[in-house]
Image (tube, rainbow, N blue to C red; front, side, top):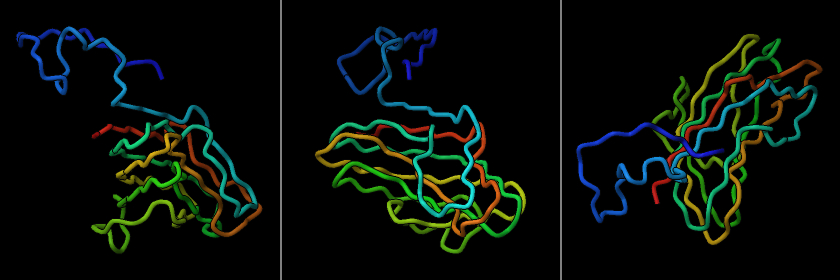
Length: 170
C-alpha cells in the first residue's frame, strides 16, 4: 500500500524526537500504519480446509509489535457451515486476540494462531477482533485464513469491505 499523505500544518517546531511525526516528515511513507480492505467477496463452498484470505493480510518486519483491528462481514445461507479462522504468522511470532461481539470470555485473550469458530446464522454477521502481534526473528505476513466449520454445499462468504487497520507499536 502506498503511503498515506495529508496536507499537515502545525505550529509546533520540528524537534529531535524521532518518535514524533513532524511537519517536515508527515508526507513520508508511514510504515507504522497499515489499512487493508477486501476489494471483493470471497467464497468458500463445501470445504473445511483453511484458505488464505485474498485480501486480509499485511507484511511485518522482524521483531516488530503490531496492534490491529480486523472487521469481518460474513454471510451464509443457513446455520450449518459457520466459519473457522486463524492467523498465520512468521516463525516464532505470536498473536493474541479478543473479540468484540457477544461470546463467552469476551474479556479474555486467545491464541489467534489456533483455529476458532464464528457462528454465522443464515444471515450476515459482523464481528471485530482486536489483536496483538509480537514478532520474532523472521519477517513475513500476518495472514487471515478461514474455511467453513462444517463443510456444506452452499456459499459461505467474507464480504467486500471487511478490513484490517494496523498500528506498529515497536
